[in-house]
Amino acid sequence: MRNLVVIFCLGSGFCFAQSANTPTRAAAPTLAEARAFLNRAQSKLLELSVEDQRADWVKSTFITYDTEILAAKADEDLIAATMALAKESTRFKNLKMPPDMARQFQLLRLSLTLAAPSDPKEAQEVTQIATRMEGIYGSGKYCQREGECLDLDQLSDILRTSTDPAKLLDAWRGWHTVSPPMRPLFQKYVELGNKGARELGFADMGAMWRSKYDMPPDAFPAEMDRLWEQVKPLYLSLHAYVRWKLREKYGDLVPASGPIPAHLLGNMWAQEWQNIYPLVAPKDADPGYDLTAILKGRGTTPVDMVKYGEHFFTSLGFAPLPKTFWERSLLVKPRDRDVVCHASAWDVDSVDDLRIKICIEIGAEDFSVIHHELGHNFYQRAYDQQPFLFRDSANDGFHEAIGDTIALSVTPEYLKKIGLLPTVPDSSKDIGLLLYKALEKVAFLPFGLMIDKWRWQVFSGQIPPDKYNESWWKLRREYQGVAAPVERSEADFDPGAKYHVPANYPYARYFLSFILQFQFHRALAKIAGCTEPLNRCSIYESKAAGERLNAMLSMGASQPWPKALAALTGQEQMDATAILDYFAPLQKWLDEQNRGKAVGW
Ligand SMILES: [Zn+2]
Image 1: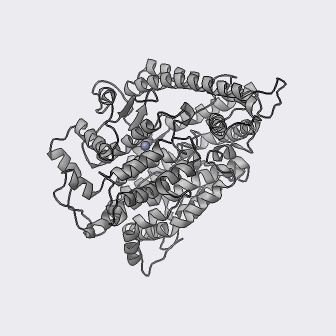
Image 2: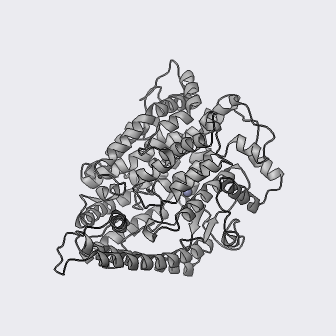
Image 3: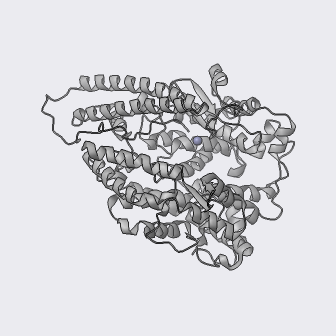
């Protein structure tokens, strides 16, 4: 992930202190002043962002008491400056200016995800609440017995590996005991966050989040629904098949035609289901090769792994990674200190100080992850000539989508071309590979959609506090077809058991990313001249695909996202039919398996 500037209003009292609607008494500003302001703002933000990223890099690759303090300090400086500049920018609100300037002002204003009210006491309260909620989540533990406490990682491991329903239920229930104390905090955060958003001229916080998509905030939910309706038939087929296989395993615990109990899908939130692949795998699904064994057998090193990834991009016509990438990246988990191992891609100076941070395990999974992370790096470098405020993806779904698009090109054909596989398995083996991928990518879609559906309704007041939990499960049932494994009530606060809710982190981007990556892949495969089924296409070695990809990447955030989308795909609309195309052989197979069985819930 790129280390994006996530703006929280921290610190005491120093927050957005002026309403965007406050009339200014000073003389009307000129275009030249607006231009000078933007220049000053961007050089200030660039300078502080580089300092922030350096501090963050050191902290993430060497976690100590001091590096954490230094990183937090750099964060605060950047946030305070962004606040001050955003506030100052309201002076130019009514000035007529060229679209690219107006867009930079807009992006500056929208870089906030939590706008604190102007009242200093309220501002302090909401920032403290945000920190507190994240703290409750981060330190959350479930103690089965005194002195025997499990954290989220350990509980997730049980969900991932166990097939004992009693153990699964205990782990699921245990984690959901962590969030009820957040409920009164969350209610206050909604109230104060909304107040801040209104002072900035938005109807509520949900409307503020939805204003980032180059369309009226009220049009965005309908756009999400339109995409969901396109892909829903595939989800229904997958859901019906998985329910039937789980019923074979767990008996009447799984209903023949109702929603699936949420603790049986291999993941705490039932958001991705690939961990239960062994329970649902088709007979004869073995693709006939084991990339992990091949890589290990050849004595592949971590640097070799990254070289494979780099070679993918140079084969498309991109320049090799800078020398400093190899000097400054962290590729191996150090033996003598704590680091954040979660893989991420960085552009420390926002120009070409590209790096990745990953504790590489030689194997198929990290082989894909490396291709994904480098996708971020090549995106970052492609837009490095843009003004600072445009050095970002076209909308927040695009950055993740690019990494995943590249990972979709890691096909058996590609592995054969680079000499890792002797032969490509025949297409009868595709069903297993496709089913595994669908458990990850298709199963996620309704979850990716419902999180912010719930929050938008909470922010708008459509869901009142005394219906928080009930409405959460109503949406989970409606979209995902999953149900709570035990009775829930308003004494629970199950939304708080998902990180992004207490962390104030918008979620719609993940849904968009999962839609876009297949749309990108389909367009690029076509440009590369691939005539095979989409799941067998890799854009490896296609200079034509590389050129079109670069055309979009180099735009950064300088244009409304439909323009960027069109630069690559020729379409200005997001289109979920590419997922249907990609999984077409699986859909056919699923429908054969589902014959005579209930579909839906
Ligand atoms: Zn990523």
